[in-house]
Every structure is written in C-alpha cells, then in structure tokens.
Length: 404
Ligand SMILES: Cc1cc2nc3c(=O)[nH]c(=O)nc-3n(C[C@H](O)[C@H](O)[C@H](O)COP(=O)(O)O)c2cc1C
Image 1 (cartoon, rainbow, N blue to C red):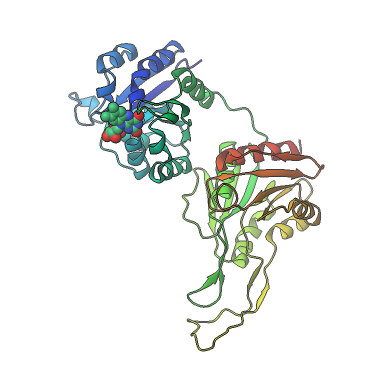
Image 2: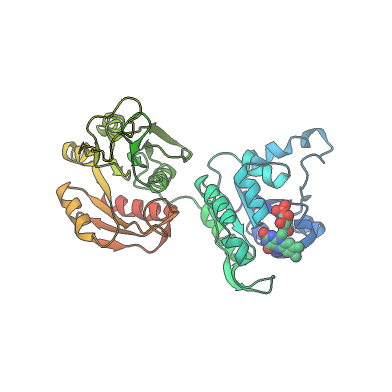
C-alpha cells in the first residue's frame, strides 16, 4: 500500500512509545522506507536498538551528531526526502515545541523542514487531565490551523492509573490513518474551479479609536478556504480583521469594514464558479464616523446606524448562470426558518445554518454544528465536528450542486 513512500516517524517520550516498533513494522511491511526520529525522552521508553533493527536505519535524535560530510545537513534534506511525517506518540511537551516553532532536535526540526503540502499526522497520547488542559488544546488548535491532522486519543485505562481519554490508538489505526492521507485523492469537482470565500468579522468605525464588530474569529471561513485549495480550486479569501495565518495555496485579500469587504470581493465575482459568504458582515454601520475620539460630555449618546451593503445578495442577484452562491445563517437559538428564508430570499444554492452557543458551535470556538439546507429542499444535519471536518462536509455537499 505504501510502496516507495518515505515516512518520517517522530517518537516522543510518552509511555505509548513502547508500541512504536510495531508501527514501524507495519509501515515497512506495506513497502514504506521509515526513518525514525526519537527524542531523548522517547529512548527511555523504547530501545534505540529495537527501532534501528525494525526500521533498518539508525535512529536520529540529535541534530549535531552526524559525522560525515553528506549527513551534516540531514535535518534539512530529510524534509525533502519525506512523503509524510507522523509523530506518535506526541507528548504535551513536543506539541508545545511544534506549535511554538522550536527546532532543537531532529524530531522538532522535521516539521519545519518538511516540504509544504506533505501530510503531517500527530498522534497525541497522555493522561486525560493533561490532554484536556488549555495549553495542550491551544497547541493542538495552532497545529491544526497549520494543516496538521490530529488522530484523537482513545479512551481506556491509562498509565497514570486513571481511566479516560488519552490512550494512543493502536499502531494498526495509526497506519490506516496515514495510508488514507497518502492515498491518491478522489478527483474533486472543485479541482480547477475558482472559489471566493469571505471570512471573519467586519469593523464599522464609530470614531478614530472605536468600532462596532462581532465575535467572529474567521476559523470557519479559513477552514473552508484551506479545504477548497486542498481540493485543487483557485481560492480567493476575502478576510475581515482576524489573527489567523493564510492557509497554504490561498490568495488572501484583507478588508476592515463591510464596504471595504465588498470592494475587495466585487472584482472577483465575475470569474468565480462559487461564492461562499462565511464572513459575519455587520448589518449596520455608524452613519457618520467621527474624526478623532468622541469625548464623554453628556450622560447619553445617540449613534445613528445605516444599512451596510449585503455582499452575498449582491453576488447572488448579479451572478451569471452556473455560478453558485452559498451563505451562512447564524442564530443564537432556533432560527432554522430564518435560514430557510435566507435561502429563498437571496436565491442561494445552499445555506449552512449554525447556532452560536459560545461553547461548541458558532463564533470563536474550534468546532461547529451545521445544518445544510439546499435549493432542492434537502436538509442535512451534521454532528458536532471540528471546523476543518465541517468544511469538508460542506464542500462535499456543494460539489453535488456544481454544474457537471
Ligand atoms: C513514566 C512517565 C510516563 C510519561 N508519559 C507521558 C505521556 O504519555 N504523554 C506525555 O505527554 N508525557 C508523558 N511523560 C512526560 C514526558 O516524558 C516529559 O514531558 C518529557 O519532557 C517529554 O519530552 P519529549 O517531548 O522531548 O519527548 C511521562 C513521563 C514519565 C516519567
């Protein structure tokens, strides 16, 4: 299955490292060449001799130990050699290093030197309390945003004596996840298409130092843009003010206000096959933003608001036959009727309805629960998913609506 594939296997210092010689054997048996990189701590849990024997290569740990000319820059050349990088188990410590971009050993430097677009599979394994800690979750979120795939730990008895989430999946499961990532992608209906995605909030100026906005983080729109690019589309991402890195292969256009977002998006309308309005565009803006800072003279202050342009509606009503328009409808409760109305009023092909509950779905968080309503009346309720997975399912549904 993996004949001719070069796999970098990073092993960090968790108890589950004892399972890794078996993972190496599975990879080798399927035809892959495996280069093991272990941290110093990992070698306290699994023997270097076992790993070197099953992989038929020396185990790499330190960047500076190479003694022959050609090997001195192996930390760089391995990034070119590899078809994929797997880190199993990934300790809390190693995840922190990777998320922070540290590179002081062969394992951590490999993530930085790996060529763009090559799959990375992280397999965290640790005590359940460690796994749930805000720092581990934040680091995983950063790494996911960089395009790494995370194989979630399983529940069961842990080395700490507890029973819960944190166990490393068996080597067979890790092998299957990697094989799936390396399999030739199914030809996507989005390949060769041009997609415009709007993402993030807008800021509507009140005065020189204040604005009206909302809690949108841009994560959903950025995940959609990343996934569309992965499927071979030319992707333009028109983004409001967010703190997210631009996904690989995506052309980004930054805007601040709704009016600016429309100005950035409008020139892209004519040549796109698909427009996805995932931005939380403010419906209203202050009529006359004040120069400088408004002083607090009076007990009350009136702010007169005027309607902002509707970017999605402008695209939808002026589009050419065959161009698809997709929107998001966010409510704080109930509200599927509003989503249905949005679908028909704006003549959209699909609306993704989501509830903002502040914890698992809607703005800011890394997960979402989408209900997809399409122009043919089909309703698909998706479960709680990471925004990356939700983006995949949304694009799967959109692909079915694209003209053949
Ligand atoms: C017995 C024992 C088991 C450990 N198991 C884990 C583990 O499963 N996951 C983890 O994140 N850290 C675990 N640790 C802590 C790591 O070994 C420690 O954080 C180390 O610095 C990790 O280094 P590395 O990331 O460079 O391999 C364990 C430590 C001990 C003493």
